Amino acid sequence: MNITKIIENKKNKKILNEDEITYAVNAYVMGIISDAQMASLLMAICINGMNIEETYFLTRAMIESGDVIDLSNIPGIKVDKHSTGGVGDKTTLVVAPIVASCGVSVAKLSGRGLGHTGGTIDKLESISGFKSDLSEEEFVQQVKEIGIVDAQQTKDIVPADKKMYALRDVTGTTRSVPLIASSIMSKKIAAGADKIILDVKTGSGALITDFEESVELAKMMVQIGKMFKKETIAVITDMNEPLGCSIGNGLEVKEAIKTLEGNGEKRLTNLCLTLASYMISMGKEISLEEAKKEAIDALASKRALNKFKEFISYQGGDLNNIKEAKYSYDVCVAEEGYIRDIDETSLAMECLSMGSGRINKDDSINHGVGMIIKKHIGDYVSKGDVLVTVYYDDKKANVENILKSFMLSKTKDEEFPLIYTIIK
Ligand code: URA
Image 1: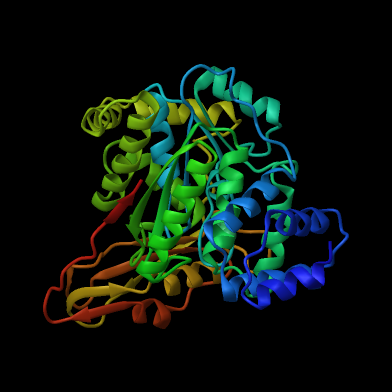
Image 2 (image 1 turned 90 degrees about the vertical axis):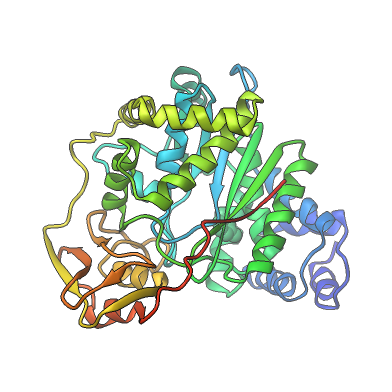
């Protein structure tokens, strides 16, 4: 097999066959083809795309580059969830305990934040002592014992994605429907769950901003899930404003706890209940209405909160010790009007500048810093009202940039819908 020929085929808009795709992935993992050659192929895929068969072969080759976790001796249907990434997205911390407390096992591998979007592992690591690097044996054992686990991807699970994702990140090849679909689905399938729910974010703060392209991504991932015989449902959800009230790791964990206590922000709570209902319905094979009743009851009865506490403590975390920043200040509005739009990417970049996330892959982060957003789209604000409270340690966020992130208007516009469509 000749990698130059494979690159040229994709450059010339040809459909790659199974052998070509499998060879490219294996040869890259083994170091037979160089970063330059793989980057060139990834760029050709970015520009000319891949059809569903090519994307399936790519996903399969990536899965086969490493281990697949075997959850088959755990009774019942195991369900996993994935979000394509957003600002303030702490849904996993709420959804997974709701689902597990209803008796459906959640076996989840999560990622770290990169760029302006956060990652669940970084959020969990703001809890002192929390251990996210579990062995495959520990991962399986925890699902068996308490029905819930969330750990980082081990080096043996989809090593091809680790290598390819790092290369994509520095070669401008992140935004591609087949590359995102194969990257996410290879990890979901290798994590061993039977059924998968996908939260595909769309809007200005999402990885894919365009609605039609988000639908295309969702359809491709659902189709790939089916090709691997895993029931997969995608929910296309709004990312035109931060989800909930907080951005920043420790602050988001605290907001997740508040939500589990029944005092969460409305849109965040609704999204968590929707995602949890689909997972419970898939896991118990009951109607969505019945599942929703169970999810609401799990929140109201504090069963989900107790499951969350059990899960954190099982992985060594101390909820009395969540990282916090030392200082804070309020950012107040100088005009009045209705909030028409919030530039969540710009707010996330301000958090990033205080150390909440990484600019480069190996950067260390500050788990305590971030923001609490006091006003949402549709709210009326008067001069002097607090828009945001900033939590910082050694570097402050830029007040001008924060103020510019809130767009005001004289009249109240329609709010963005929370959920656009469901793809099955
Ligand atoms: N998340 C992933 O895991 N992979 C992508 O390519 C994009 C988002």
